[in-house]
Length: 323
Image (tube, rainbow, N blue to C red; front, side):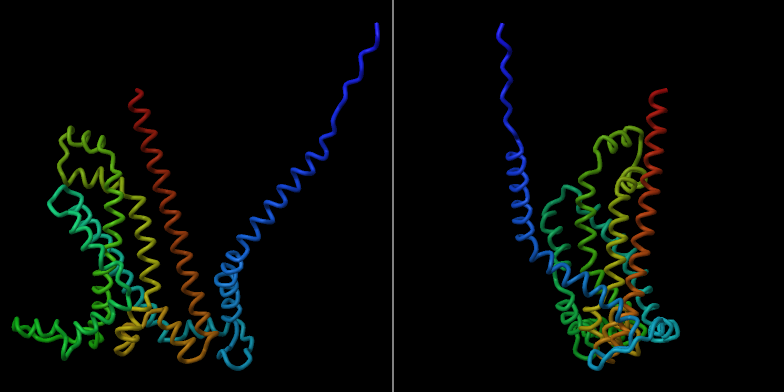
């Protein structure tokens, strides 16, 4: 019986090499296409962040050579009464704006979540102020609230009421800025809450109604718990926006009168580009950045605890149903 012929084997090494070369060419092509975007991101975000961090440890006027001063800028901030006033104004602005915008947004969203006539028009009218730029808002309300020629004081005079200083009164200016921001910023909360209300399970609502729950109990025990993740997001978003307010202040009051509307970002701009103490302004900017980071961490921890609590409640309900 003749021996079995040895089977011929074809080496696959060339195939592996060609596959590797093809993948390498694809990777090089992909990097060639995305490298401009990567360079832009690095040039406009990462590099300025690192540069401003180094700048915060220097005495720099953006003209003459800088001088390393270490933590002196941060020590000066701690003793600066103008910075303390800017922090107080920013915190007061945030404490007033965030809860009012969320409460107003939720109330309007609940009202606009019904089947009423022309509801689409009402939703549009509520959202339109949000798309108006802060600069345009500032110019508009500067004319309306002008203490001498503004429409607001003209209306108050016709009603027999005393005229107001509005943006020129140190006791009113910051409150007026909060009101202007509420006029525009509440629309964002309305849209987000409206989208979230569409996702509230109808089965939960029907089950609660069958158990005899009224509108107040439905809102407290069904709607609000379902909206918790959205509320956490809006609290974080609105807080960040309020801590970074600048353009409205710049257009309307420029930090006045008597520093009553000087907020942190305006203080940073004033120090860096008006007083030409760029290192000092960079230090203030990093204080704000750390505060924003801490707020983000706190909100994340709160959200994680809420998720764990909801998971435990769901597990207990499941166990109770199984028994």
